[in-house]
Length: 87
Image (tube, rainbow, N blue to C red):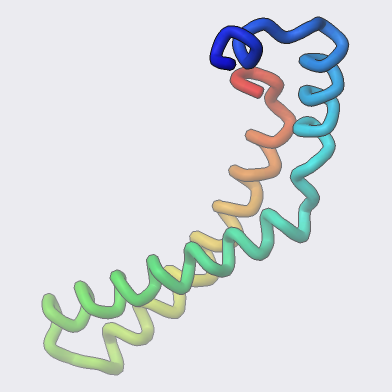
């Protein structure tokens, strides 16, 4: 069974590559960016609160962090989606 999985014909490999290449849509990148930023923002909020002792300052830092890193992550994902290496 393992040997069967290791030996792939060229058409099957090409077809899987073409599917992978087209599978990541921008909306998926947006959803991934949002879900990751919720986790990251909670982390930033907690760390900022521990360091400052002020919830208002911590929330301000976390809010700015949420917006900027979500935008950066989206473009990072789109660039990587266009790179064929490793697919």
